[in-house]
Image 1 (spheres, one colour):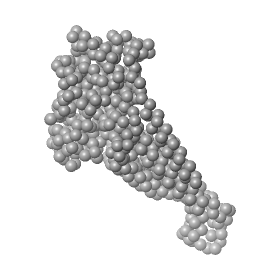
Image 2 (cartoon, rainbow over the protein chains, first blue to last red; image 1 turned 180 degrees about the vertical axis):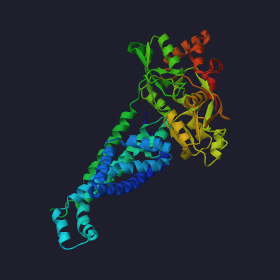
Image 3 (cartoon, rainbow over the protein chains, first blue to last red; image 1 turned 120 degrees about the horizontal axis):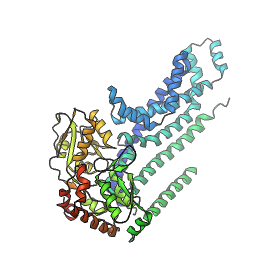
Image 4 (spheres, rainbow over the protein chains, first blue to last red; image 1 turned 135 degrees about the horizontal axis):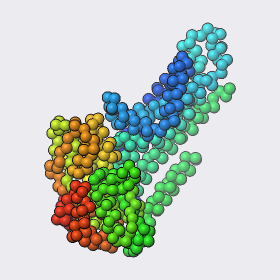
Length: 220
Length: 283
């Protein structure tokens, strides 16, 4: 078996189509995760005890089960109760909920890391709850969260091949389908690796920059 | 600076992979002796009754493995060890030396004949559709699916049905690769696909097990010929293939062949009335 550049040229456009779906799933998944994570974090920190505990349990449950199982559940089991989602939507929701639970912990840690004195000072200067959050707490809580969140974004990006199990035609699935009809794995699978590597490297570079920019500001 | 080092590493890894892949797999003339010594042959199967089946207890059955097991026994290889694989992954797996033979109902088509050494025909079947009761989209051939922009077809990855659908002009995004029979049926029931296509006997097996009154079968599909599979061997293992053929011919002669495959619903006559040469040449 030899490396065939002609074959590479021939399959690259198809793989790029798959890559677009992969990136789309990552971005949408990240957006869902950001919102769901925030909801989980707020519920866990501010809701009445029973709801907070239930949320905590849900978060632990989702973190403690494999993403692949969750994807199968969303894709194959939910239709039984009348919820039929298209494959990509099911995948985005699965990724979003799964990584949302991780994001929730990041949010929680970020907010809890704001020193107690800041809350008390806000109260002492008679700021409203809204002003406290917007002007005092969030500006201090968000910057340290950014590198951690970006880390999960990269992790999520690398998990998208799982979506091929629920028939989403993303990069991995396109590569498999090319391999299936040409009996050659080396070029498609190598290219999948290379595409993931290129994007991960760019992201790592960006992450380093984020860390430099945000993580070490105002060491308290 | 760091980034450049990373890039160099990536390039190195890629080059290494290319070199590793370029080492040719040497053809072994004493393949049969090797298998005898080993005591078993590794076969690739799918899990698609009645062609190939894996019971709840892990026991491998189905017409294709049963025939292979018997012939290997006669050749002096007492056992077969099966691994489940996607159809499209079987030929690459064979070429990579992961399997000694494919016995999975992998139908002979010219491009497959070019990639592997097939035995004489073993199991023949036509193609079928499972679809919603009443056939609401009026789909009777792969061409009908191509012509209807709303129709989605599900088929096993790399299987004959996927290829037939693509050849008939169904665009890639309407050919859904379904991992196994149960998921295919479920996707059909949920309305994710409009048609699930498999060989006739497989569809009947699947639909009768599901016993869902809302599913009906179109069999055979219009315009799709009857295909036959054979046991597939690596190019270079023709000696083993020829030995396999000799035993297969003897069994066909004596009627033992029919005794194995007919309980599964396959016609021995269909396999005996055609040859590998004819099937491989067919369009």
